[in-house]
Length: 118
Image 1 (cartoon, rainbow, N blue to C red):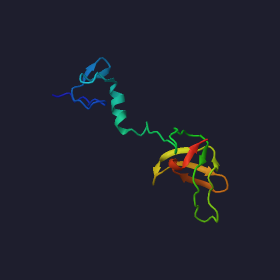
Image 2 (cartoon, rainbow, N blue to C red):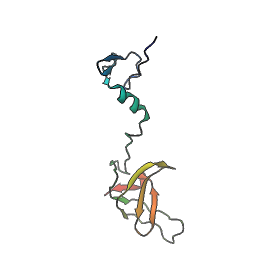
Image 3 (tube, rainbow, N blue to C red):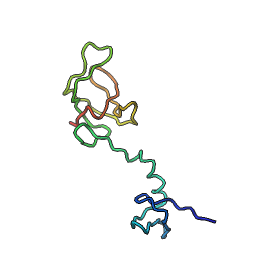
Image 4 (cartoon, one colour):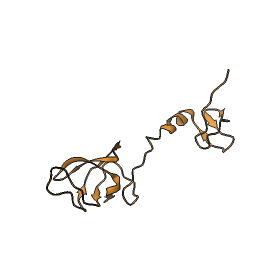
């Protein structure tokens, strides 16, 4: 008859105990709710996407392309300085984590490492 409590999300100690509605770790003093502890390991909800210079990006931001990009099927590529409005952050697909519509080229996926927040 063992009561299996989750490990502490801060220090991974197995000595957590219940105190009211919270769980407490005696090793580091961290307190958390049981529902919070279950949601943290996934980490996807807290994913932060940063641009080439370290600014945090969000849905709907306007970004500027920092390097020239070759576009398959187009005689010319996308030039540096091209503004892209209304980006949408997505789960990474082959390193591309921005879904955007680039004027003159249409919808495409971009990497956050080649854009800068405007």
